[in-house]
Image 1 (tube, rainbow, N blue to C red):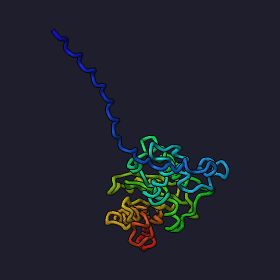
Image 2 (spheres, one colour):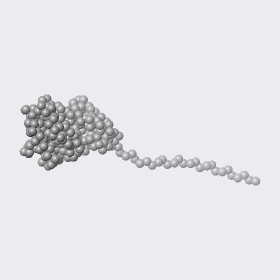
Image 3 (cartoon, rainbow, N blue to C red):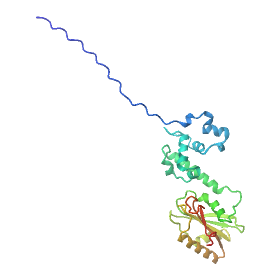
Image 4 (tube, helix red, strand yellow):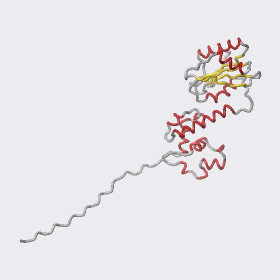
Length: 260
């Protein structure tokens, strides 16, 4: 009996072909890394002082760092571009900052804090009591208080015999539509300061300072109530925004309109 031939050797298996991978997506350019060392915001601030920095560079110093794909310089430039200006950015709330990719809760809080500090500095840094003898002066004094507010607030400004400010008191804060004011509360504050004259003011969150019928009524009521106790209501100024004001002034003065 003949022997069968041996089986052929097994065919060696070939390795699987390498997987086909898509090319890496190009990453966003890192503006901060591309800047020369001496041109980065922090180095420029050390060398030249913060006063030499552009608005976006100042924001970059506050933010300190960006996120993956969003370096801090580009992020700062986007903030300014979206707001339109540094002045407009001062009106932003945390929810506005959070809309931008790369801005988290901590960075939004940092920015809101800086804006609030700026508002307080503008409203308190004065060497002498301001002279409030014109509607323009009253508006200039109160504008930092009203900047970015979303509700109506009502202020009393008591004046000395030379129309210099004795005290500015926020009497009430209301909804976005109106704030309630009682004449007795207003006169009590004026008498407490020993003033003979006073100004009242409130803001319109919409930015349009034109008076409503309710604004006119409270002005007349306050004027008549003040006269009964020998006090002088010098003016009632409504604070708005020049952009939203049909007359592009930014405020309305009952005194200038001959209505007080």
